[in-house]
Length: 243
Image (cartoon, rainbow, N blue to C red):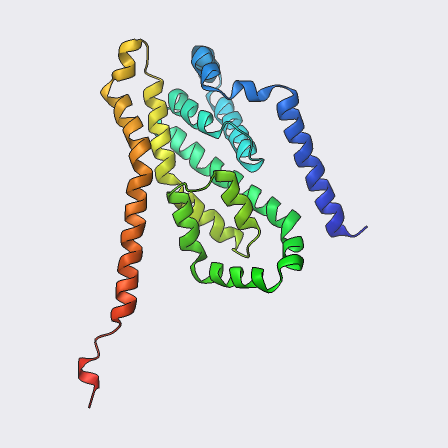
């Protein structure tokens, strides 16, 4: 058995074991809004008793959920906002989600890139060429405007030749605005103590941002691309170049 095949088998076995443990132990039931609402006070007490340990556990859990494409990342983000506050959660989630996404991309590349290269050949080479030319901006657009699920982007980019360093950096920047919106919504959810809190200005503004952010990002990207096309078509001013 070659070392490459052994590594793939080991990775698949480890990932399968972690996913099986996640669902087998019923951990998925804890990553729901209902559980967050019921257990917010208990979680806050645990956090107060061991702030650093709680934050470290939260960070590692988020990385695991993102890396294995497990359900619950949104609830973790909202819950973090409610428990840690805006800036701490923004830092934790920004790095944890990007590290997890990069691990998912690397896992997809390790397991499937070689197979796709053999099967697609020149077609994949053409895709790789496009990714080299505009891949960073394309990935940034996908991160800024969540057209496809988080885990789909990670897996799909793993099949391309985009460097993991580029994937990480672009994902870190591109996911930051959306992460901030969700974290802010979490901080508002954490302040709901009565039915009156449901219609608080801060909470309504947070949910308005959740709805408007993808549209605003789409308009911004479209405007940037339109300016790029116009600049490319106009070219340099050559009025004085003709004899």
